Amino acid sequence: MTTLTVAGVLLGGALAGCGGGTPPPPAPVPTPPTPPAATASPAPPKKPPTMAPGPAGRTPVFERRPATGTPAGGSPSDDKVVALSFDADMTADQGPRAKAGERFDNPELIALLRRLKVPSTVFMTGRWAEEYPAQAKDIGADDLFEVANHSYSHYAFTADCYGLPVVAKGTMARDVERAFAAFREAGVRNVVPYFRFPGGCYDDAALRALAPANVTAVQWDVVSGDAFATDAGAVARQVLDGVRPGSLVVLHCTRSAAPVTGEAVGRIVPELRKRGYRFVKVSELMEG
Image 1 (cartoon, helix red, strand yellow):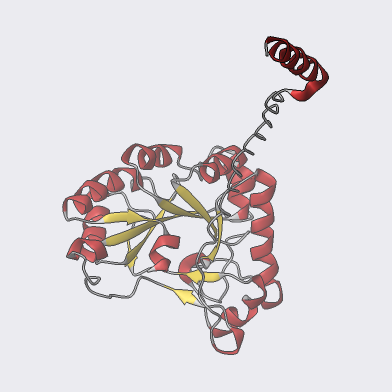
Image 2 (tube, helix red, strand yellow):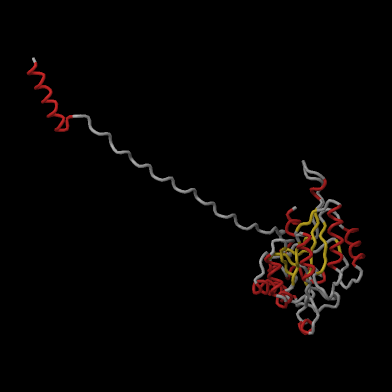
């Protein structure tokens, strides 16, 4: 009996030495790393709103936001928006006057709009951008502003428009495209496909001739009267008396031709804010 027990122990040890025992546990399988989350691509820049062409493809005309009343669920202040627009005028033949020292720019006005944080639309001529390329680029690089087209030459698109020279019908679209080219040359960003007729003068023939430029013509419903004015208080009163919800105001960004605009704006902005108005660019006004 004892001999059999010893033999069994010896046999078990021999089997264990030949691998007959419990095998070791398998090595753990490594977990693959979690791939990084995909980075969302930035949203494309928002396209400025435009109006559909008019009858027979004529250039559409925008003057102000239509009165819509209080939006559903909103308050009366939701509709109290107003757009200030500034014409940076310079005609193609005014180069000698600029060289002689006449100032067609107004950097102090732009600085004031920045201090007051007033979003604005600057309607710039191509000739102005050529004369003041650094300022044009600076305005266009600031998201507070958008730059629109005021023609290249600031010549009239109809006859008898404040004594301005007249652009031939066959070259109207080309004049507008030349202004856009001047903006690109100056490095102007935030350019919108809007056009303002010099002097605000247009007729049906001009709307047809301008159709190939694919722009929306932008007029106004409030005339500031700042051109050649010397009384800032009178300019401010005229604007304040005329503004209604959705209004579009025309002013100027030309020191020699509108010397009191900055002072008038300094009165207009706080008063309209006190009345509950919010300032927007033309593109935002058009969205409504």
